[in-house]
Image 1 (cartoon, rainbow, N blue to C red):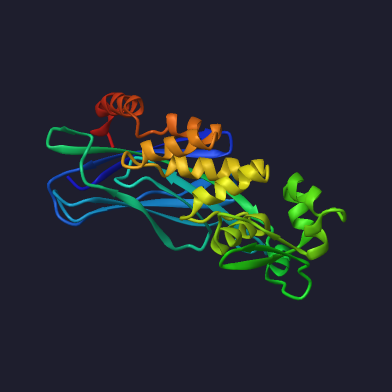
Image 2 (cartoon, one colour):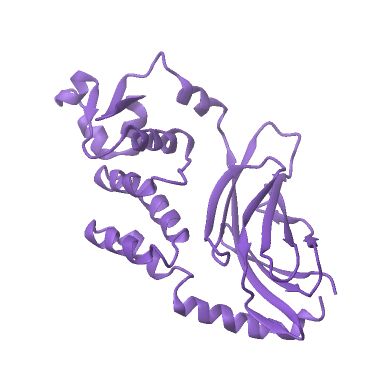
Length: 289
């Protein structure tokens, strides 16, 4: 019997949740590509599951493309998956290329010599209005303020700082020395973190690494949206190895959003039990795939 896949779709607000039940038999070089799924009427996605044979990892990949290819705009994908060996959360602009979500080495259960895996994939999309913003982001002639760290500075526009933070808005009033000097020295951060801050303000993107100092910066400058996004990505990418460290970091810095996200992380024992119950429920239907 070849690799078999059954996918259940569930729309959760703006998220499309795909619950994938994959059956692996004792064969070599198994591969299955799913049908297309519509995400928020902006993009199509399909999934690919591959395995070189029993004892090898099950590899999951995703491909996305715009539903309206003729339109002059782009679509950004946000994809998360917690059931792979390393939790996955990333974002990118639809480009029609395969992106690896992760691997699973151990199966959830075995039924009649078929190895069963359950993988949940959460997907959301948004239209990227980036033609004008990209020009501003790349501008070097009309920037009028600098964010400075010990190892360098990042040039920005005062208007963007004021729009994203009430703290910066107050600082940029004429009576503050920073407004006169056109620069603010930020202690305890690197230039890279300040660049990540600019990337988010202008392009709404988050880094894959360096989220913790960016989260502290967002908290200090009362940038609630950035704070929430950083906490969410940290919680989604959390593993059993760094869960305790992140929880301590959140508690010490009084970041309730991260504490809540970590407590709800699917890698906890409670969620694992829920996943097992889902597997047991779906075992009866796997032979019908």
